[in-house]
Length: 45
Image 1 (cartoon, rainbow, N blue to C red):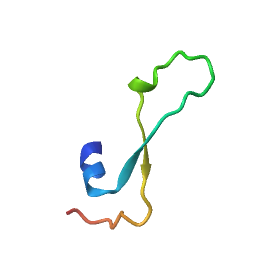
Image 2: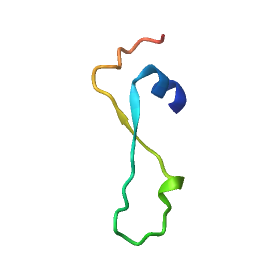
Image 3: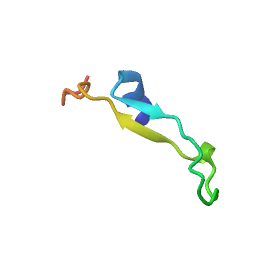
Image 4: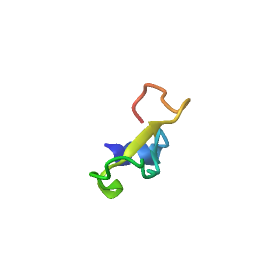
């Protein structure tokens, strides 16, 4: 589903930076996405 939203331009993948915290989680195992304003019309295409 995320791939579909990416292709439609409704979300984008946010690059991760090290948080400087405990370093228990690897950035390669996490993905954060952000909604792109104005690209959600509420209709299926």
